[in-house]
Length: 306
Image 1 (tube, helix red, strand yellow):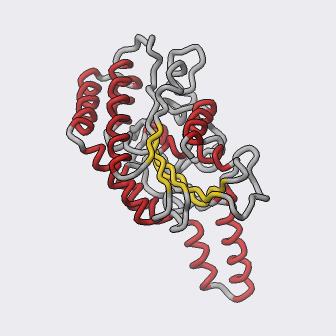
Image 2 (spheres, rainbow, N blue to C red; image 1 turned 90 degrees about the horizontal axis):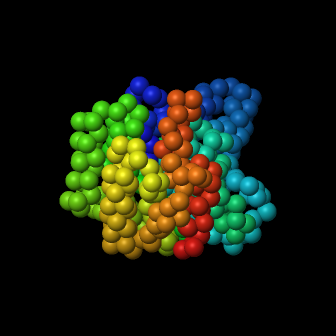
Image 3 (cartoon, rainbow, N blue to C red; image 1 turned 60 degrees about the horizontal axis):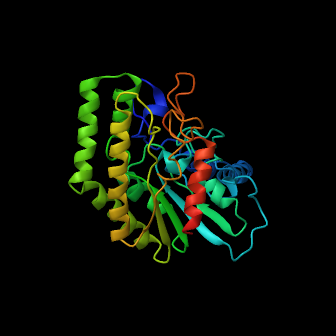
């Protein structure tokens, strides 16, 4: 999830358009260039792809450019192949150490932490801040290798307009807009829309990679139980309902659901040791997303069902 607002830049923007097509441009340039230049550009294009500089939902991230601590070469050929799909929580927004700031892919996000296991190889990470189930199905699923063994998915926060909730309830408070945004999201949960969209996303992943185990995560409640900020507990309750819908949709299509609410229970905004970043005008990209400790908790919960 990510907060959406054209006024506050990427940190409050869920509906992100794909941006860089660098490798494609270079490839076209190389094709038209004289032979020596063509060879040089081809080499540079290969290096660019290997370095993961062609970013955004249009460019999949491979295991070699997503290493977390302990990652790198030397993995056994029998390692479990892994792809990470979803929104800003799947990308790692909020943890810093970004590999790009178009999708806010972080080397401290949970996919990179899972990839640090020597027996696991991250082969695709198209997860991107701003993605809804529509973007995951249309743009990310096609980037998953067909023989991938594990796929993680964190998605649907954008579907229910969580960014609008965050903006109107906690950044520039507008009571009427806040209550309307919460109600709209709750309605999509209650009428089965969210569950159906999650189920369709899992189905799309399984059609692409028939042998993959699909692990679908929920979201943490953003605020500590003791938080008294207006709308904090209402948003927490909506998050719990959203997670129930995600669980229902995932399990109905054969996915495995991972609930992270309990892991974050004592670490919401307003707690003594928060694992979620509060809003700050000095670091707008991090607000209402997990920090590095939060993503470590995500990775630990996912590994329990691996």
